[in-house]
Image (cartoon, rainbow, N blue to C red; front, side):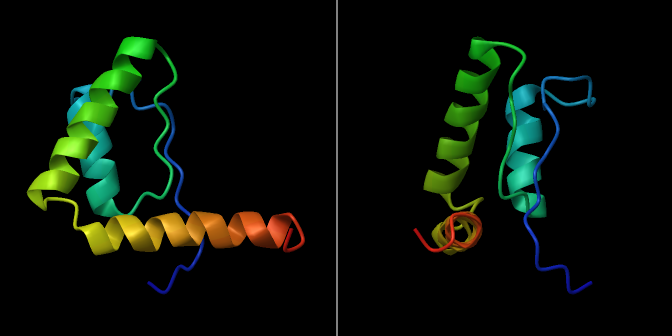
Length: 83
C-alpha cells in the first residue's frame, strides 16, 4: 500500500469482539504505532502486560518495536522543528 504515516488506534477498550489485551497485541501486529487504551487504568495495565509478553515471546519482534518507536520519535522531532 505504501503508507508511510503513523497508525494510531482508537480506544481499544471499546467493544471490538476481543479482550483489551488481545486487541492491543493484534493492533501492534497489524502495524499500529500508538495504541490507545483510555477507558480505565486496569485496561491499560492489562494491555501493557499483554504487549510486553508478546514482545518477549517474539510475537511482536524487537525490530518491529524499534522501527515503530523510531517512526514516532522522528515525527515528534519534525513537529518540534528538530528540537
